[in-house]
Amino acid sequence: MDGTPRIDPYLSGNFAPVRSEDDFELTIVGQVPAGLSGAYYRNGPNPQFDPIGDYHWFAGDGMIHGFFVEDGAVRYRNRYVRTPKWTQENAAGRALWATFGNPMTSDPSVAGQDSGVANTNIVWHGGRLMALEEGHRPFAIDPVSLEPQGYLDQFRGRVTAHPKIDPETGEMVWFAYASGPVPLNATVSYGVSDAQGVVTRRDDFEAPYCSMVHDFMVTRRHVLFPILPLTGSLERVMAGGAPFAWEPDKGAFVGVMARGAGVETIRWFETEACYVFHPMNAWEEGDKIFADVMEYPSAPLFPNADGGRGADVQARLVRWTFDLAAPTNQIQRQPLDDLAGEFPRFDERRAGLSYRHGWFAAGSVDPRERGFTAIAHVDLASGRRSTYSFAPGDGVGEPIFLPRAPDAPEGDGWVIATVYRGAENRSDLAIFDAQGIEAGPIAVAQLPRRVPFGFHGNWRAAG
Ligand SMILES: [Fe+2]
Image 1 (tube, rainbow, N blue to C red):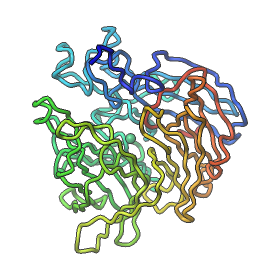
Image 2: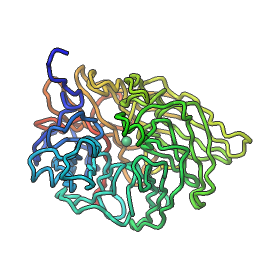
Image 3: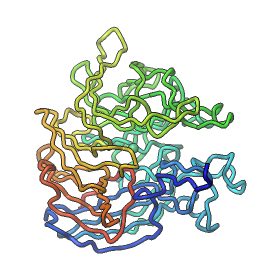
């Protein structure tokens, strides 16, 4: 130890927060497609104040970056998600909650109070724009002003940051983990909201153990719950350890349930230990269910259960097959691509259905290498993969697909993503032709400052 303060990589470079809320008219280079009209919202962690103790990238206050596209122009507006935590800390002028609301290290004045940061995703459904984080209720915000509307109590508890919207029924299908009354429990909740946003179902079941279940899979007829061994343990916390850690001996399970069935019918499939933050898509054919997932050999960004540092690992696209007619519960796993990546997306008009096209951020997830350096497009029918690499020092976020028109063929449209320009220390919104990624952006909307690396975003079409 030389006395030098440790610099958290997730509080430096383009992971560092921006502490201003701005409205900018962006400079356009190239031509924004005339048919592109709507709003792109992106969420991500942006701690309002320097954290108490150790920081974790997943724990910063949510900030929404809104890009409003109309008539070839792009306006930008960013606002913090004004959660109760944000509001109380803003009044105090300092952080009051420690990372993940840890009661051992938070300010005693906020003991037992809501620590939600609403920082992970932002979804438009049922006439509401909802900032989502997996440990708390959805937090509604105004889609134009980005002002707070507050927590949505109708969900009756915590909700995942990764709900799925059924393109055929308009339903939003969702889940929650560790949703029981005590911290870090093995209860999982399954829920459905109808097309108008009314919650029609919320049922609880017990998973094999408490796992961080970041995302799940939904097909036309089934729902799949991955319980992978990034375990949660209150016992470990009380012994001074991490709330979540890699513990491969617990095994890897995926619960499969028909969407209309009761939670007591869940069938547990098994495989070797691995970890997935994000599936791309899932669908069924006859008795088989297929899921394309970004699979890691172990959980990145978290310690091992013995307190040791977790391995630096990358995710790759893998196809999981579940055979409902088979006498065994083994999951078959087949690699689809050898390119390291994350943030897989696709044409969500094919959500839960067979599909052909996917896009993801490619390159290293190591922050010392400034995150993802390329966008990849995979054509799962032809096996062709095309990529576009950004300049050295640049970093790209999650690429999302926007259809050219509501009835355009699958994959016909645009892909948009925020790009950090390392040489200029600011960001762009880049717009690609979805079928011509390798040609580079067809238009770029330039910001005068950075948009920090963050998590997920979604598009709300105008009209
Ligand atoms: Fe996520």
